[in-house]
Figure 1: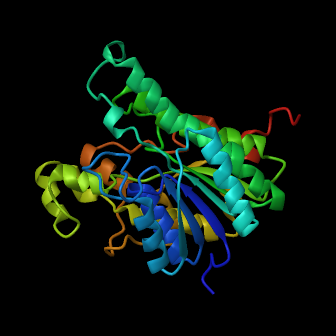
Figure 2 (figure 1 turned 120 degrees about the vertical axis):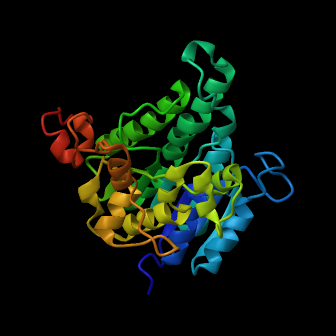
Figure 3 (figure 1 turned 135 degrees about the vertical axis):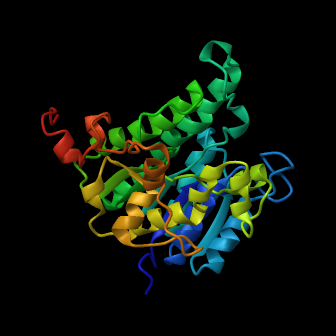
Length: 319
């Protein structure tokens, strides 16, 4: 049997990018994966330039050996999220893995502008899509984990450090996701078989990024002519394999409440990207910029990210 055969996963935001890669790699290990998002065939939510759909993702999950199920959901709409989770319970009777990867903020980010010049309506929508959607999805999905008192929750973020991310709203979203993983771990502390972590990819070679650089996966190295750092990029399947390894790890609870990176987990679990490489954004950063990439555990990093929840919160009230 494959290690995740019989397991039920929900990847919220599986249309493209990291979400699609995660869904497919969970399928590769045998999981049944509910692939959700707003873009369906004949009705793309991200405009005509983005052709990816959740149906296509579900089919790719199945092609990898799992079972993909596409469900059109706007994760900022409570009724739709509630119905999704009721459907999972009705059809499967359980949920084992929740991956919160909803985003939809790329077209909203106004990089290069100070916060006093940003469009407030764009910023508020980014917060709704990037933070509220995660909280709302967890609100209705986590009770399914609680019914069996076990499972894994993964919050997908961007970066595992306090470096500024170039836009105040974007920065707030990605840092809030890390904090959300910690707070959920804290509130679930009496359920030690339920683990919550945040996971970040490195320089993600997503469909949108390939298009931005005018390349394809076949000739992606030509993208280094636009940005030489692209040489250290990774496919969405790399972070996908990171999440799949976490889901299959019987000792994953040791990572509870932490923020983890694809390259760190690749070293630990020994997996590689689908192209045979093992990109290490942290090492590349150090070698290229002459200083260590700040990761969880460094002095400048918040102490709450530096260990399992029971260690970090040893001095906190238990009630």
